[in-house]
Image (cartoon, rainbow, N blue to C red; front, side, top):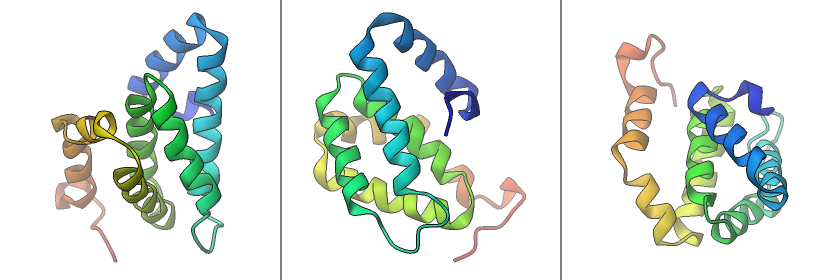
Length: 128
């Protein structure tokens, strides 16, 4: 996923991050890349190398939890299989990432995004 494909609230964060320091940009690109690989629609099973790597990167970076939550929200709103894989990544993050990640997930903003996925007002009913 290219940053231009992100929801508008993600792009502002990316441009601010890119203008500040090189290592953060590399980390952000790595997070995007590993999220894409971990949730790619053609995957037939979970790619734990990328999932655990994604969790490790979240724990290393100061803004890792905020960036990860934005990426996961975007993926959860994707196609069915990609969304299910994103939920697996979310579960792994809940088990392997610390309090900073848990605090981001507990925010109303994230919970509201999950409600949008299962809400019948969404226009497309949630199928299992």
